[in-house]
Structures are given as structure tokens and as C-alpha cells.
Length: 210
Image 1 (cartoon, rainbow, N blue to C red):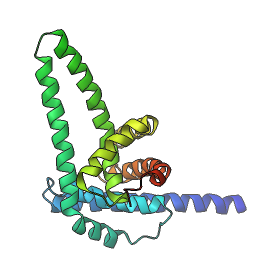
Image 2 (cartoon, rainbow, N blue to C red; image 1 turned 45 degrees about the horizontal axis):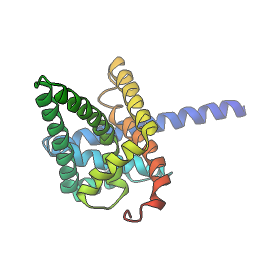
Image 3 (cartoon, rainbow, N blue to C red; image 1 turned 90 degrees about the vertical axis):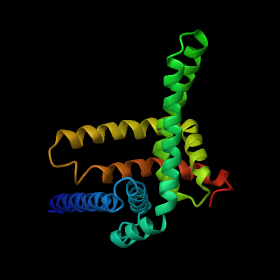
């Protein structure tokens, strides 16, 4: 009897989490469209990561819509600015790599190889940008700075985020119907849960962060 009750409890908990993921997934899509995609994706992502962070911290009874909307509205400009500068860095790196690849000499090949390494670090840094945005209240360029520092300082955590993202991608694309309701929600929880552990380790050594 106790085993049956435990099983029912686990099934209920699973269904509850599926509903939560589906809800923030739908909210993310709606608010991304509300900002005409280009201006909506970043603040919607910040709002989603805010909810996910609260869940990871054990605040599972957080009022989802009100917190989502409040974060989206108040952080609209900041989220877009941080995202713009991160995308700009990625674009400039890509242009530089293409430029040096077209030069046929040993120096250009060496520089291209180095820039490819920087590009990999940049890719890992992108996973930290939204967790940083919702965890710390700092200046715009500090978010970018610390995203790169964390990516370099914690390579195993960065790899875990990348591997987890790839797994979630294959699962949601392999099962029809999961993409619109169970994609970015679980992904945000995965990323924030890993990055939150990193932040917990480093916060005491980073007095400039609040």
C-alpha cells in the first residue's frame, strides 16, 4: 500500500513538473512573439531563467505569470543590451576567422586556430549569460566578462551544459509534439541548476557581485 502511494506521489510530481515546464515554455513563446521575436527573445529568456532559478532554489510555489511578466517588463532593455553585445562579439569573431582563413600563410593559420579556440570559449560563455543576468545585479559589460571567466574557469560544468543541451535537443526533436511545450523550459532548468552550483562556489570570492 505504501509502495503504491509512493508511486502515485511520484507520478503526480512528474505530471506537475511537466505542466510547469509546458507553462513557462508557452509563456516564453508568447512573450518572444510579443517583442516581435528580435526584441522579445532575450527578455523572455531572462524571465524564464528567473522562474527556473527560483525552482532550483526550492521556491516551487512561485507565482509563475506575475514573476515572468515583472521580470520581462523590468529587464527588457538590459536583457536586449547584454544579448546584443554577446551576439556582436560572436559576429566579430566569425568575421575575423573567415578573414584569416582566406590568407594563405602560416601566421594566418595560427591566428585562425587561436580564434577557433576563442570561439569555443565564446560558445560556452553564452550558456552562462542568462544565469548571470538573473542571479547578479551588475553592469552590462560585467555580465559578458564573467560569462567568459566562468566558461574558462569551470570547463566541466560548461561541457555538462552543452551535452545536456544536445540531449534535450535530440529528445524534443525525436518525439513529435514536444518542441512547442517541452523544450526551452527543461533546458533553462538544466542550465540554471549547473550554473547555480558554480555561482554558489564563487560568490564568496567575488565581492563586486551582489
